[in-house]
Length: 112
Length: 118
Image (cartoon, rainbow over all chains, first blue to last red; front, side, top):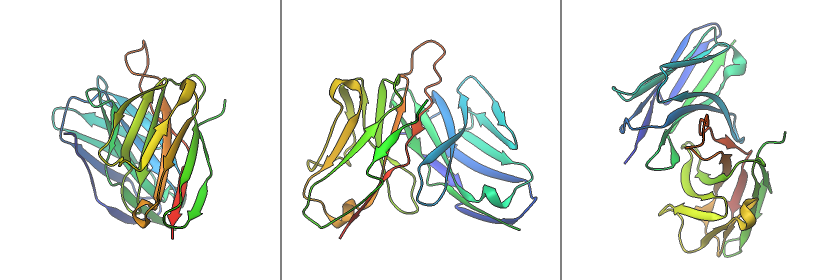
């Protein structure tokens, strides 16, 4: 059974810091891994998707890496801004399960 | 190109009433998913469809819950005899099924339908 864990659960940082959010999964037989952003009371916005054959993906100030052998993914946010404040969710798509399994998220607050 | 749309966005109901949520996926997507999310938690899988076939249901989906996707287009999620524990955000997502050439399997989510049961 796939389980996804995210550390830390919450993070508060001053503007401008570089951040690393961690995600671990128990079953390495994943099809892909997605990172999402969720603002309070809103749906999920897809940030990055890493295929199982890839090691990392980049979009603007965001970089996500994937290490299947260790069951880990990290989301790196460069030069954080107050507008980055949100909950960040990691989800693993296991082919055998045909669905995304989510972690509980990291709640990020970036203060000016 | 419209994304995934859900209706209603908010629903307040009294315990014991029935509620129905609708999801319109991205038009060319053959997979449709329903998730439930409670405060402070990640979304939990409820069920998914490939075209009109419901291929998997979670144990979270009790007998009071039913989902349909007639004609493989929009989907409805009905909750009968609502309970206070059903209060949550119900999220719908769609994707192209994996296994198709060059398909990443990326899921796209709607804005969700928030249910409050009094």
